[in-house]
Amino acid sequence: MLYYHYMSVRSAAANQQPEKIIFHVDGGPPLGDLWKKLVEEVPCLETRHLDVPETVFGHKIEWILHKTDVARNDILIKEGGIYLDSDVLILRSLDPLRRYAFTMGRSTANSLSNGAMLAKPESKFLQATIDTYKEFSAEKFSGTKQAVLSVQRP
Image (cartoon, rainbow, N blue to C red; front, side):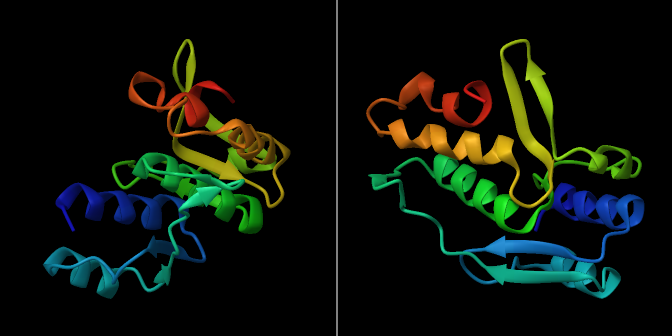
């Protein structure tokens, strides 16, 4: 665990005060002294095994970022909650945004940012986003088009 990962979790714990902070991991939990310190300092922290998706709607997913996009959206559709990339710092509570069924940031004039997302379970927006993967193919969404499905298409 790097220092900015540690600070991201600490900022979420301090400013959001969640019931749970869940690390979805495909291996074991993070390693190192900062992880040990985090486990001691944040009692609501838990790790949960994640089977990384290899396909979506029968299409093979090769790029790791597409795999994590699909996994992240599936988890939020099923459970709802707040998703944060490991480099996001929370400076104040996100609760005012939780009144909406779905919230995500804007990155540029033509794309969104899925590094921070808030969703109620069964979010229609996220379901529509996942549905765009019905047309997915590794060849169609490769190279410079890789981010289209998760941040430009929605």
